[in-house]
Image: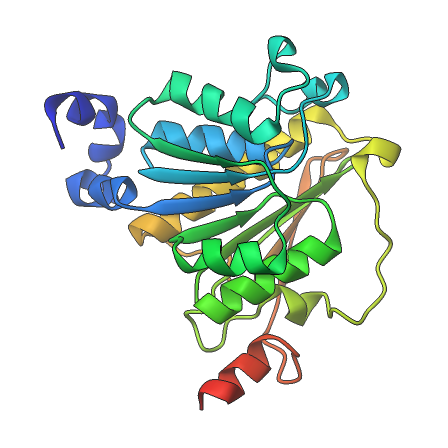
Length: 254
């Protein structure tokens, strides 16, 4: 690190848990952020400000006026721009030293397989089950930890799925791909603006902990937030022996 970096990241370096070595690990890391909306906004902002060396933003959508109530990565002047490009501009303004790759495309299976393989951590900031399952499959296949968040109405959730641990559950252990779930989106159901900030900031915190290698992650725990009462519920999760994703992947490696 040069003198400017030592100054910029000094409040991290002062922490015994991080120090110079931990900050250097962040600088050497690559975070893949899928979704540059409500959750992806605080995720990307905090990862960039913390000094994660490379951030890849993936989003196929464009900035809309209705996004600005909660998607703090974007501004009124950038309405109509691709979200990934708008996000890149915002991150460059905060920390020009971070390499930001903006991909204005859908996160399909082939794209995910290529991107996840080169990432240190993946953050799922999307809003539909099909993409979430595709991201999970790619992370399990590449052995890359996944930080997953969701927020709708006044309810949020966050979990970590770390395939590096033999007993760590994956997303499909909790939400089986063949099970039917009601697909709800904020465009029709609404979402409390600060809620995405709370969940997204926690996703960034979990990702930074994983990258530095400190503390205890949320692996095998699902945190649920009721923002009306501001109450958290912690649910223990477990790896499913019948999971069609992580159990089959483990069996194929045996």
